[in-house]
Amino acid sequence: MQKRIVVIGPESTGKTTICEKLASHYNTKWLPEYARTYIESLNRPYTQNDVLHIAKKQIELEEELAKCNNILFIDTDLIITKVWLLHVYKTCPDWINNAIKNTPRTLYLLCYPDLPWEFDPVRENPQLRDYFFEWYKKEIEDLNIPYFIVKGEGEERVKNCIEEIENIKIL
Image (cartoon, rainbow, N blue to C red; front, side, top):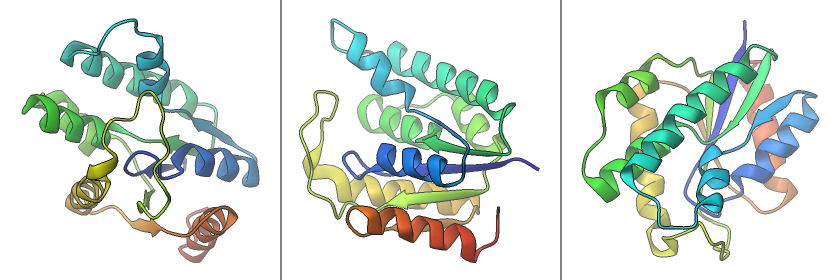
């Protein structure tokens, strides 16, 4: 049975690095965050329609990559899209909620904002990282899917993830 492990958390908490290193450790693939690639390519501010496009493309990319692996690490998922839509636009379409509920997940690795925030052109809210962390945590808890809060710096963060994955014997 395929295992899908999502690395999620506020901006600048090491999600991409964790995905890269876990995929390397487990000799598998990982799915980068499509939103980053898309927004970096825009020559204008993003819109609500852009966010919805990002969500659809992220689903499509995940399903394509999921066919190839027994283990797939995913850099963010639709929970972040849902929260962003509600935070910025005060609405979220039902199809996103349905996709969140119906997409298989084995484990969430929820990155705590204990790393220094680093500037990046697509990052917007250094002052709201704790706020978003708590919101993501609630969304995951509502799904009743196992999760682990990732803390620490550098290699310690990845080591903590590997230990948790091994401890709960999901792979």
